[in-house]
Image (cartoon, rainbow, N blue to C red; front, side):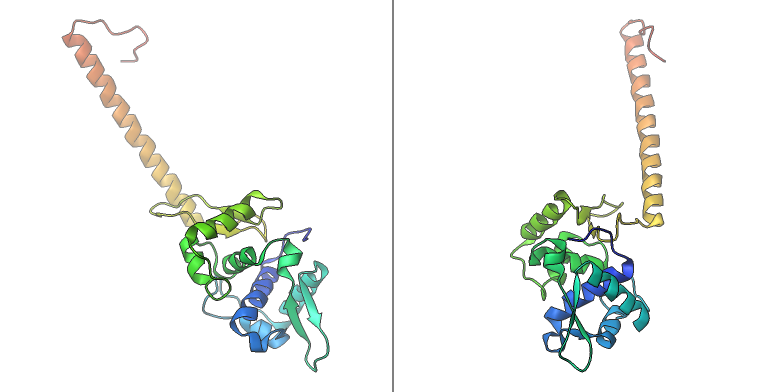
Length: 214
């Protein structure tokens, strides 16, 4: 199994190989040119990349060292295929989920079920959750459930093949603003409650406690 985290380009190359095995089986294994085109797709990619064949080949060589990619011989054009399931030590269902997380970025379980349709057809969302949670719990951790961003109804998942995911600064800033607003609101509510208790104590002729900050 892999002994180091992958670079962003290595993860993209691995994800494309897994995806194309299922979506264009007649062209699989992929040539360097086809693999580069897949990496640089403008649709179903987050982020969009603009890689050269040299950069893709460098990533392929790195993945070969990790036994995640193998070179196919017997063809006039060199072709490559993945070995993700065995190399990562996870079942094909988990490979499908990781592939979509690598290619499209963090997603909810419902989104993952939809996007993995051509790679693996999950029975329901709970099945998706089951494989995600297994990857999050078992060493080495392959996936992580992200904290809900403000306004989100469901939490999203991210892959850990390239290390800890970097959350967008905007989302973090909004979370801090929301927390500050909530603390301010709670302080105001506490002040109102203290005033109410003090007023009731006066009406009942009860002396405020010496520890009462009012």
